[in-house]
Amino acid sequence: MRVDVVTIFPSFFDVLEVSLLGKARASGILDVRVHDLRDFTTDRHRTIDDTPYGGGAGMVMKPEPWGQALDALVADDEANEETRPTFIFPSPAGERFTQATARELAGHRRLVFGCGRYEGIDERVFDYAETLGEVRLLSLGDYVLNGGEVAAMAMIEAIGRLIPGVVGNPESLVEESHESGLLEYPSYTKPAVWRGREVPPVLLSGHHGHVAQWRHEQQLDRTRSRRPDLLGDDESSVV
Ligand code: ADE
Image (cartoon, rainbow, N blue to C red; front, side, top):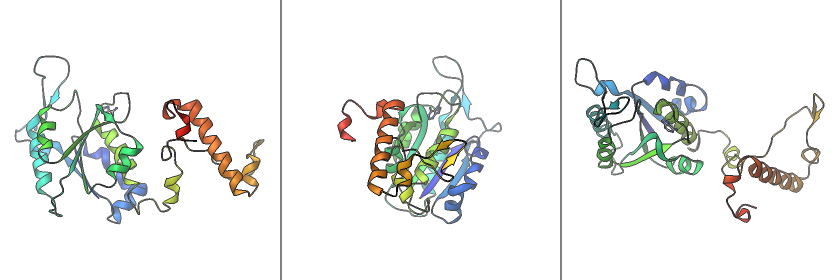
């Protein structure tokens, strides 16, 4: 998968060099390229924002550098395929980004993340991007970050680890929180007793059926108490 990121803070993304995603980049499974929005400005001051029409607080990102950046990225496509990129603009005003969104986007050939700062990006940029590909405004949750960078990083990690070959043991992905619509069951390792706390005996029993049943009950209990919103009105759909 190719992932392009447009930002005024390219160094935020240095962290993608490390860990699992760093390995995926090194092996070519994930081709991530980070671009500085200011490189697409044409004035001496490399201006990327201006005051909002209609008044109000803060600054709005100007459409011209975004237009230049998106055009350049669409033109730079070695695959030269018919399929168009998917543009993702992290935004607290977007649709909710969930594990299902991550799974869907992991199947896309090319993603372009546009990271806005300040009060946002001129709305016409989203209309224009729709002429070049699919456009998604996605929110991590109901809180406001200073800009799209941290959100884009979280989304790249959530999506990237679902690409085959990125996580060494694909089975580890199956039993995670949110994959089944429930939170993950608790995990334990040796020693069997630590600081007076015992591992639940069923896990030492060697009885796979009992272990599976216990884990499922734990998933339900945790989800009921911590995230009842995931169960909805009809719990029978997940039992
Ligand atoms: N940018 C600012 N806040 C955000 C959020 N909650 N999710 C995604 N992008 C954001």
